[in-house]
Length: 264
Image 1 (cartoon, rainbow, N blue to C red):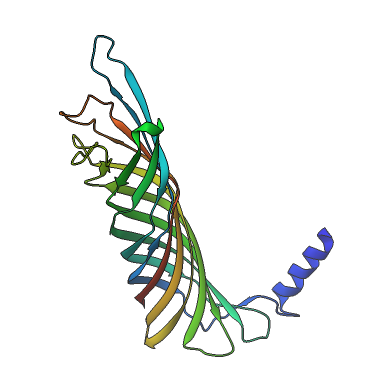
Image 2: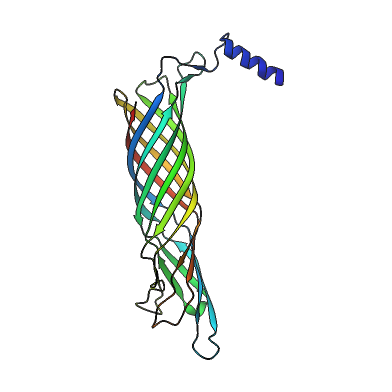
């Protein structure tokens, strides 16, 4: 098997049967891009944990565990990218080719407010409804593969995968219970943030509209790992409480994006 692999490599490199050769006429170089789009954040798990303290000489603590799922929400996003694309690699004598690239992307996902519908343990306390107005800043490193096809020298399909980090910020969170109207259980500090690992898959089409200028349209699947937040204790006249710990499950986004790309 090893000899067969070596023989195949030698044949391709000497061109006796060109299997995967670089096209010297295609230009490699750096590029920049701007993009924006719309999409949705999928439902995910949400949990609020803490406790409150009963009055009296023993100051007994009652543990609270509210656990449920968020609603899905529409989102908007914008971003920038900078990358470097290499010369096209040809597949033998066919008109198919591949141009690999690497890029960095910065993405801002605008404010959206999932609401968690969360039954409480002990059940006598009813249901907690937690609203988390959130934004996310994402930094990604991507590998992108653009395909040359026999069908057009102006329109090119592509695929991309990436990984990086996200900073998720929540401002003005609200934890409400119908049994306690008018009370936000996070009222002493309703803001928190956390960082998480993020991955992305994208696929789309780009078309050359002028020399070195391209437009593109694509679908993206973005996944941010689970995050944790600590909000402030509830202020009087509510009974004394702990600070509240909130866990948000893995967030997934289905995004539709369009933009412009300029190659130097």
